[in-house]
Length: 96
View 1: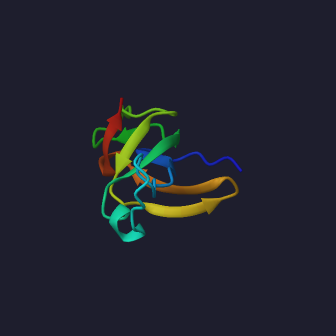
View 2 (view 1 turned 120 degrees about the vertical axis):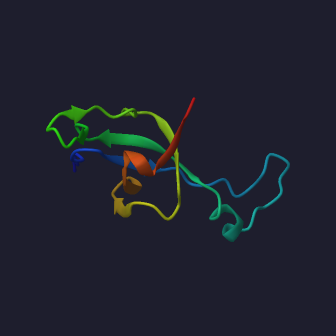
């Protein structure tokens, strides 16, 4: 199924949090949930529609690794994983 976000919305595939550190320490699930989540941009809309009718392009693009707040957006499950619809304003940053 192909989903094309509208306007300033972004579809992000959620990366599963690491539950074990490099040293082998198991991190409880509730600890991971309080940190911002990471994901990969799967699709982007055309841009933010401004009051004057122009469209401002988005700063993120397909394939970007991003950070976002766990409680933002609308989550959905598709065949190959979990996704979240966010507006560009809900994205905290791009991981370089």
